[in-house]
Image 1 (cartoon, rainbow, N blue to C red):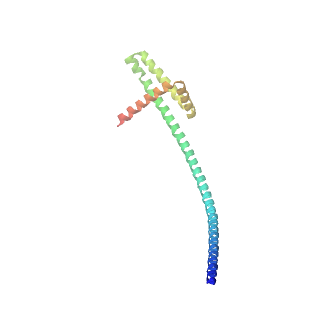
Image 2: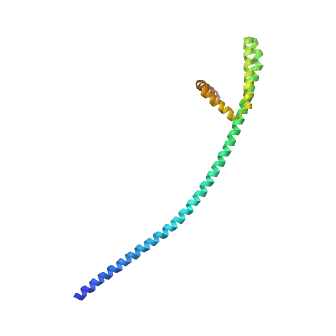
Image 3: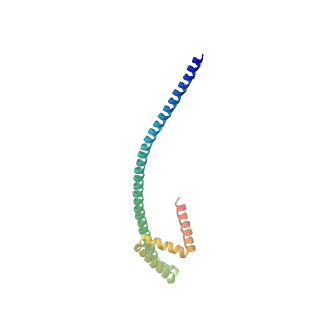
Length: 171
């Protein structure tokens, strides 16, 4: 019986040895597989990173081009608006000047002179508006608001009221 125990003992030892060897081989295989996956992932990650970088640069270039186009169009529209405002002021000046004689007859020469002075002032304002760039007009507006914030708020309220009345009557 001692032979059987020894054989069984050796069998257990052999089995443990084979099992330990198999476990070590399995660990080595898993490690090799993990290393291979990591290398493949790193390579793929690098490809994705470079692809993302290229697309990001393309998107930035397109956004920059779009912004530049928008700035040009906005400046063009602002210049058109400035020209229309100047034309409207000139038109108002002519209407007042044309009616100055009627004002003389109905209200008196003193009020007719006020109308002529206002007409002349409007014409001069239209000329100045035509001569100035948008940047200069913007700086003057900022300076006016700094010097007279109450007047600027009052003008904004009055303009808002007028626009509200215009849009309300248009409905």
